[in-house]
Image 1 (cartoon, rainbow, N blue to C red):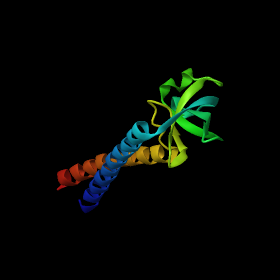
Image 2 (image 1 turned 90 degrees about the vertical axis):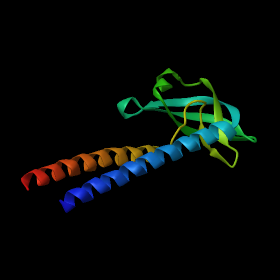
Image 3 (image 1 turned 45 degrees about the horizontal axis):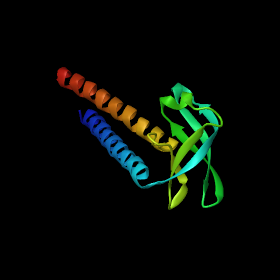
Length: 139
């Protein structure tokens, strides 16, 4: 029974981490959208990843310096094409942190971490609950 409780508790901790991470990513994206500077940019290339995920290489200029960056796109990424004009939102304190309007462009590592927290959290809560139920029934 103790092992089952540990699994459920671990699952809840992972789900809390998922919730906190999601809120922080949403806040980070909203802050960039609200306070970021905007410049004209151009799509250099569009990439389709796994499970219909999209990203794009974008070129833009900040204070006379030509830059390129990768943005994560939502499902509408399929509509972007090479050489399309886009508005690039960048962080004035870190011009390499960019997004496109309406697309938060969360870092890939953060999306992976959030996905793992969710999957393992649900798995541990479910597995621990089943184990606790079976142990209680056996008694």
